[in-house]
Image (cartoon, rainbow, N blue to C red; front, side, top):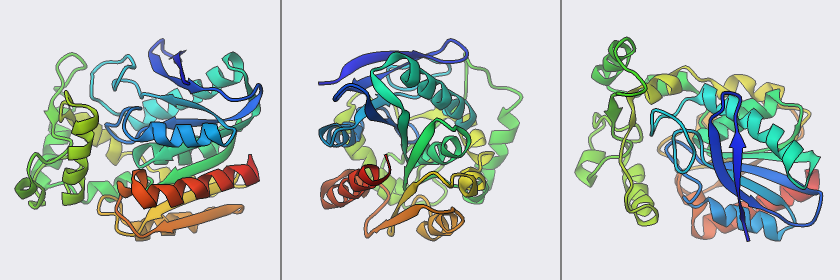
Length: 294
């Protein structure tokens, strides 16, 4: 069974999540969702498997998403989320019956990038697991249509937290997904099919994020921190058919990390790591990695 938790951040924003306890003073894994995701999106499956293996888990919603506080809603800022992750580490270390000397940080996609940054900077983190990680805003900047990019910068002087400009997260149709200039922040055909699963999990889902989310994505460079993670153990999971984040670039970033490290390559798409056989092989490898290093 999971217990509700509320974590107050450095600026007073309350993050809401779930604590999956095991035995007293257990090692603990911190889990958060990728871009626009919430804790209910596929992540309880990971939390339950880690818990079954003897690891406590804290699974939470990022600010502005899910049950967590924050304005504007549906807005992601990598820098705020990095700061919030440090606050989550502090909360775990001081408020929960876990071993504060054995904390692992787990992230996927956008939060996979957060795991790389916080794992490099926070000495309280002992193990880093980053799957299909967001690695570079510079790379992302090369992909948006010119008209959307121009709109991002024009919007900087006009937007506010009370009345932000929004853009789609996913394409609304297969035809739209097949148009490279569709304007969605995750606009590939693979993302469209994933969106159908998201709507099943969250029927009232609003398909939008703030335009300034894209601005914050473009100025974040998790790859710059990877070489600083060592001597902490790093497990990186790469999907070889990923259409959202180039797997070759992910592998290149992994190669910059020091030891100890492990690379798991899975012959699937970006979102398939949450489902079926790809999930099973993935989570078994992750548990074995935690068993070895945490």
